[in-house]
Amino acid sequence: MIYQRSSQLFAEAEKVIPGGVNSPVRAFKAVGGTPIFVKSAKGAYLYDEDGNRLIDYINSWGPMVLGHAFEPVVEAVVAKAKLGTSFGMPTELETQIAALAVAMVPNIDKIRFVNSGTEACMSAIRLARGYTKRDKIIKFAGCYHGHSDSFLIQAGSGAITFGAPNSPGVTAGTAKDTLLARYNDLENVATLIEANKNEIAAIIVEPVAGNMGCIPPQKGFLEGLRQLCTDNGIQLIFDEVMTGFRLAKGGVQELFGIQADIVCFGKVIGGGLPVGAFAARSAIMNHLAPLGPVYQAGTLSGNPLAMAAGLAMLQALNDDAAIFQRLEEKTAYLEAGIHRVLTANNVVFTINRVGSMISVHFDANPVVDFQSAAKGDNETFKKFFHGLLQEGIYIAPSAYETWFITDALTYEDLDVTIQAIDKVSKTL
Image 1 (tube, rainbow, N blue to C red):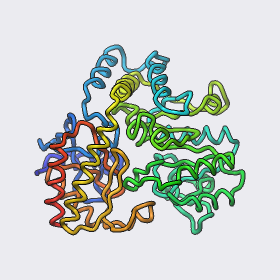
Image 2 (image 1 turned 45 degrees about the vertical axis):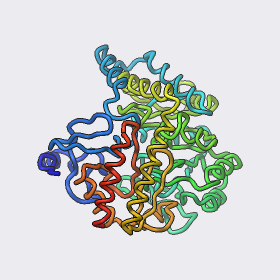
Image 3 (image 1 turned 60 degrees about the horizontal axis):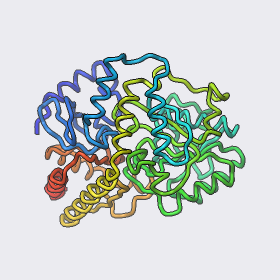
């Protein structure tokens, strides 16, 4: 495939946009080469500026669970746009989507909409701190909760040391209140809690990690976090920006039967438009202004276009009892096919999958946390990525990102993908 037009557009973009992109992972820094510029998308396919058709496995990083340009969402947005795009005042739509979300997700009474997953996680942390009157939080290496200062922290020299900022612009004062733990390591978490007794407001976690590739929680990990939080007066925050309304109607809380104190949403809940949300029981949410002292606001929060898109998406998922089973079956089919061809071609690999999230790690050992994910062969991944791109298959341009499956994919699409992986893996 030829990507001449994309190369030209990227050169133009670099002159006026830092790095030529508005989100760093789009820049292809991890894999080399020039990013693809998309012109349009429909169903399971992307159409780029050079006229190429690509089978899409990132799906706007998750929200297109029913495919690109899903008609009910498009129609809802168009109809609402004709009535006005933003008011800065309450609309009935906000109550309708809030009521539906609360009905679909267990253990939440109220929800507040914001404009991104970053904003949702940032607000959840503030709410947890205000509710508990404590300052410190625990996050996990490799889990990404957006680019708010509290989350851009790397490990210190030991298990119970304070974090240090790993992005310029994040202050040491912010970093000292963020403790870094190892994913799937309860003992490490317990040590941090013991060393910071009665100081930790919240533990925030991707209950199924997607930002170091797909990494499932090991048996007992989420249950253990729940117990540690209960025993120590800590708020357990599930960052379900990726998993919410994708792995089940009620997300990971429903899938694994574990209750979080606060849940963050994004991606699917916006139907493809920029939306985030955070939710909890009334006793916690009532601490938010204007009812309580914890301030959080957003001029465009509850934007009618975003609410229309999100409501149409959630209604479609709520009304289709078989959707999550179909996604599970299609992703399992893809997993089996990838496993078959990589094994036949003597490629060293590990596949992780939960529902419609899946990733291929080029390492023979189990991938259970950031440390083990980092051991993967990135040079092999680069060849794999560009090989698939030439075959018309688009996966995330990073070894540390999960693939997202859409119901719009047909089994023919999956077979084409498996055949392409077979061809590419012969060259690895």
